[in-house]
Length: 246
Length: 246
DNA sequence: TATAAGTATTGACATTTGTCAATGTAAACC
DNA sequence: GGTTTACATTGACAAATGTCAATACTTATA
Image (cartoon, rainbow over all chains, first blue to last red; front, top):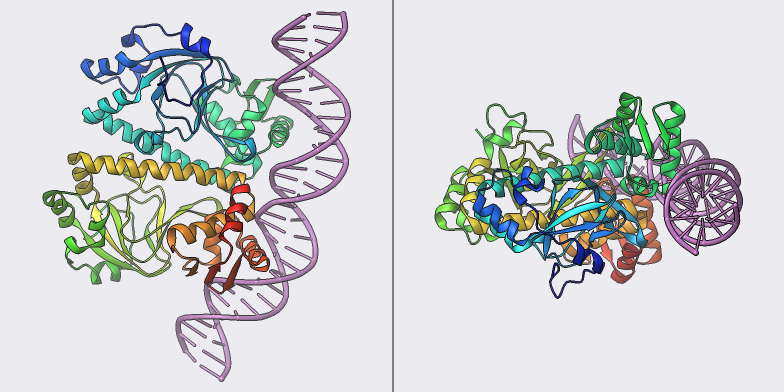
């Protein structure tokens, strides 16, 4: 069984049954990233426990508050790390692309998830037993370094996010999100955005109506074009400046 | 010399000269906390590099952007970890009490400070060479665990802060700050607050005028009394509820 | 004591932002 | 095709929040 007996998670049953199948870990996209330099023996420890699962867009991969029994590697799709705040309002911390391993700070504290991971588009993920993961991290100094490094990087991004959300007005925040989608998620000025308007709003801490209005303003100014979820950014410099000035 | 040659830090000269004096590390308040279980040999590595410095209230201990050459242990006073944001607006992440060691995420990334540390009250701090600190952390598994644990804890607090600041309105945010001062800083419902009104505002991401107004509202409601910097909280439950509801 | 400088407070006002309700649009389903 | 459902858009309005200027208060200093 994928989830331990006492887990308070509740994955749809059909996911758990249908999609658990062995794939060749050596060829896996996970291997390309965090585990690329890992000795085969150590990598085996990780692989032995892994479980593949598919999620449809909109489904929850793991939920804030649930017992942290596995870390997750996204192998396909797009996911969001988000926080469930006051009165059902969500705050998206960041998006997760394939090859990224998502752990969570609870791993070393209280073994609970402190944020939720949700599928923005259809996703394939690989669940890795947290005990196996910890074992390998503590066994392997280089990996431990790398993990620390990445966690530090995330913390720095979190500080930047905190300043963005508390000190910038809405146009700056939306410009920020567009630059993020362009520069870090789709790596192109033209993209079909997997995020709904509500999710864009959740990423910039405002109401969806406000997000829509600002996007329309940017469109009217000629900085972007919008057709449903088809985005194209024409004036990166203008958006960068709006984002920087706040 | 306290700071390496290529440091872009600029501490007032008189601090650097006057206050470097050996104290008995074994009795130091630092020792009581993070380093309490450290083998004597490892602790010696740390102690050999330490430099004591005093700072007056309002002075900067280290500055965002500067080269991270030392980690800092606060031995006396009260300090703030803050972020210098847009147009000189500061955001205080949290307060630091004596015995706490302040590193910063840059230690494992780019060797720069990603936030500033400032003295809220007069402070005594102990600078520890970052190389010595890293050496001991990587040598000592138990300490490494503890460091990871604390960093995780801070990250969790950061998530909570992010939600507080983006999803709560001003009364909720000020109530939050009062609960924080009561519960985690002064551990008493009655305290002489070392923070200025501006700093209370920086802690709750609002203008100082707004902070003042909300404090006055709480006073008018009878939840607190205020006389300059003398605070007394009468109705913890009311503040807790205001904080929770947002 | 007088003066100056910084901090705190208050009120008036403008701006930003959210809420609500109405309408439009698109995909899914019968 | 028609219906339903979810999502997107728009406008009107209310609420939250910041800005600015005037004034009080405190502390440091001449």
